[in-house]
Length: 394
Image (cartoon, one colour):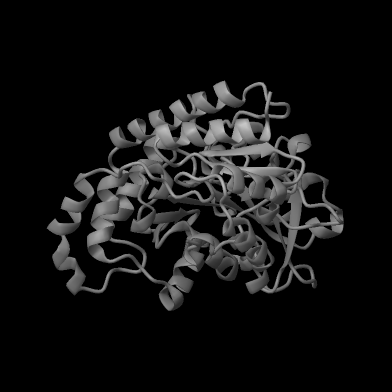
């Protein structure tokens, strides 16, 4: 069965083709779902207890920016993780999932014109679809910048034309990257911060995959901003418990930045926000304070990295992901490969072109499929082996 809500981030043009891809499965057996990034590992068992213990909070309107306990737990986590001190009252706001924050950030802090022109908002291509919709909703031009093998799967914003950079108000960047698993280095962040300072735009750092990595924690945007002495108001970071803690249904994330930027974000939230119920805020505070379950979760993904490397390591063009839980696998044709996999093996993957836009006649996702390694290890192993046997036979 096709569940529309699970693909709500796909562009409209992808829907008819996706339905066709999922219509026919001739391979028999139980389908293996590797399309969307919905974690299937167990969340901490004690989360339910915290919600029950705080159930009386359902009788009260929750604070728009998050309870003091939740904001404090988030600020403490930022300090532990990145060695950056933020003020829990003025620099942190709880989100009803990061998608809310990523979308509303444009309307909260991006001006309607810049240098007398229509503003531009930069983003990688492929990208998380909310970036483009946020730009369009904010009456800005979404500017898709290729994030390909040649650019290290991260966008090279600095090579954009001067006229585009002069009207840029914000740049979205996802690190670790969805779908490629690439991680922005200190050098990358430093150069992007310098570019943002030169052309006076904000950096929207989508870091929701930051806690799923092999051995070295990915450096963070706010962390590098502090190291180089950049204005903290120039960087806006977004984090979530969905991937870190296997809690996509809790809808618990946060946004953090300098106090001036956060003042604007909080003001929009006062009119258009949907804060988490207090019992869920209590659970989120407890989860941000605990790292044991995160380390256990990360170990499960490391095991999957090793499985993927073992099975696919000698496939031409295979790039082992640095972080995150996606494989970005090279194919001749994304839709044809996804259809072949589904029909012959029952493995569902997402055509890479559905995660990108065609710019100047080129879609940087068309030669890839995205494989979500979110299921338990046994199912993931069977899926990866089926992909290898079907698409990359010896």
